[in-house]
Image (cartoon, rainbow, N blue to C red; front, side):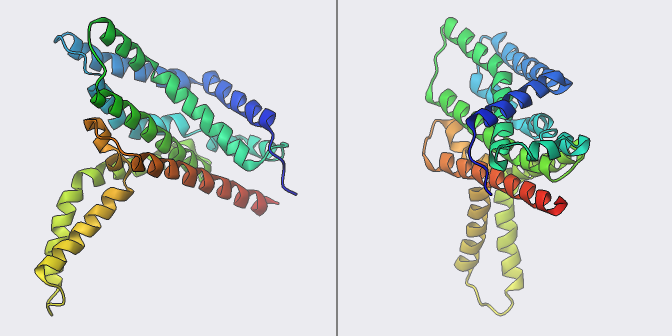
Length: 268
């Protein structure tokens, strides 16, 4: 029988998860790292008479491959290792509510960690600075990318009982995103050259080979979260990247639910 939705149950798990973060060193390490790194970047430019919030946020975003796995590695891994996941699964709440509560707790801690950047923004305004489209776009890209990465990292935590392995898997995924965003243009040229050398019978004309390589290059850019929102940092807005990253969030939370359901039935 399907369990009914329980807002009180979701809220209870959310509060429990958030309290567990602050009962372990993870929350304080994450808060300290964010405050230290963002403070150093902001101060570096401020001493030069500049307040570059967009550069600060882009630099922090480049560290997502370390910070977000650190944030999410214990979401389900620690529950599985100490056996508390079994008790959680028998609680009068749906699996999707458990997953959503843990996701929202991780998102909340990430937003709290990002508060120093908001303080830097206030300081910038007090010093006579202004918020332009570039800053606004960078901030939107920063948060929506983080929310998508958190969903991926939580899925990685459900596939392993080891927090370290879960963190390494998510790190590798995020590094692949960054690497592909850097090498995609080169990869397109390599594919075009490969098609020319392999097409010994002349099935494809030169233009067709170029179009195929560009198509593969465009596909790699299309599925990569870090490149889909790159225009936001230049103040160029469109709604499709947001819907794309929201679909990433829904998809990986769905994968997490299905993995938990499979593990529950396997044990029963």
